[in-house]
Length: 301
Image 1 (cartoon, rainbow, N blue to C red):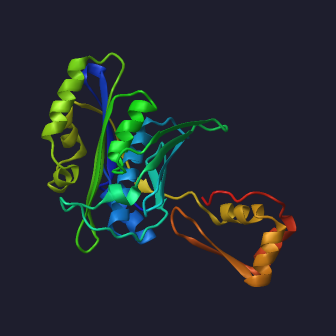
Image 2 (cartoon, rainbow, N blue to C red):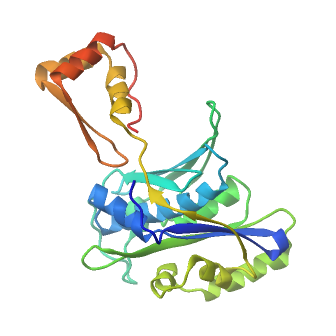
């Protein structure tokens, strides 16, 4: 596990219970994702925004539930996958971490072009093989806009989502974080008008966080009188293990394991989520071969 002592998310209520709002700071988490995957700036921004939003969505989960977010665009980054749980543990990766694009006319990283058009999927694992999946078409590829659209069309919840990652010229993550505001049943039109007015006045999320504004301070600017209900530490944690990777090799089947023994004399398996390399000797593969059967390739981690 890797974490920054400063990484956390808050859950609040506002408008006399007619709205809920979340905010987070994820600088350490995004820095760890960047380090583990060797991300270039635009990939850092795309994965970092997705991870920040997923971390806040994790505060909506019940105990033992998990949430997986997949952004599948046709841009050069390829697919983005982030996985989180109800305890603030987050992991994730991007298919193509080494993408460079010219900056936008405003001088910002061109995440929208890097992601492209496609689909956003949200999969909630409620345990006991019970899953919920929602989806929507990507609108801009800028991540936060796409989540705003997702909540409106897939979950029918009026929402405002913001997320940002500020990367320095030397590729260091200076700050990262975001917010998520949702109007609840019973809200009135004036509530939406007030939130829109406040959102229009607030500038860049990363600029505010870099200036030292806390997640609570950010929400105080965005929603009237938020009451903090929960504060949760956020950290990078992967669920992969040697045992789980052994199981994945076993599921490849006898023919595939025999080919590894014959051609490589061993095997090397890399976890997509944390980039940990697991090496298996010929003797270990032979043990797996003795118990191997047919099967499809499983998810690594």
